[in-house]
View 1 (tube, rainbow, N blue to C red):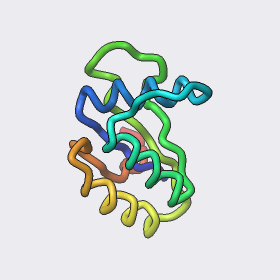
View 2 (cartoon, rainbow, N blue to C red; view 1 turned 180 degrees about the vertical axis):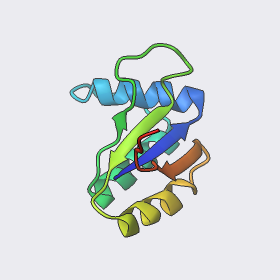
View 3 (tube, rainbow, N blue to C red; view 1 turned 45 degrees about the vertical axis):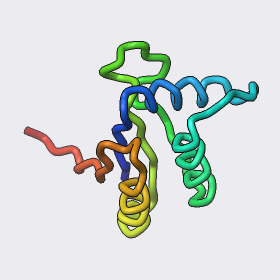
View 4 (cartoon, one colour; view 1 turned 135 degrees about the vertical axis):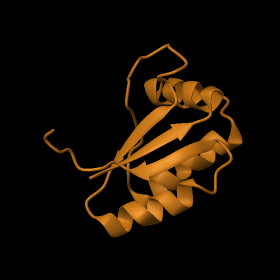
Length: 97
């Protein structure tokens, strides 16, 4: 089960950069830092859907893997409180056509 997150374009690029450079200390937008802190508190990892992408249409998308729907719903409600989050939803199950 996965939660898909779409951030504002600038925040997505910054978060991709931050996740790619974990060993260096960078000045981070406070909202991006708060999002990272939330992920740490909940015990989940934000992962880019398109790692190392430079296209601004791809960089804002992230995914969180979760074990059950109740946790996913709590995460989604928390994410929607952030100004940088444009969308947060539970990825539908894959189905055959």
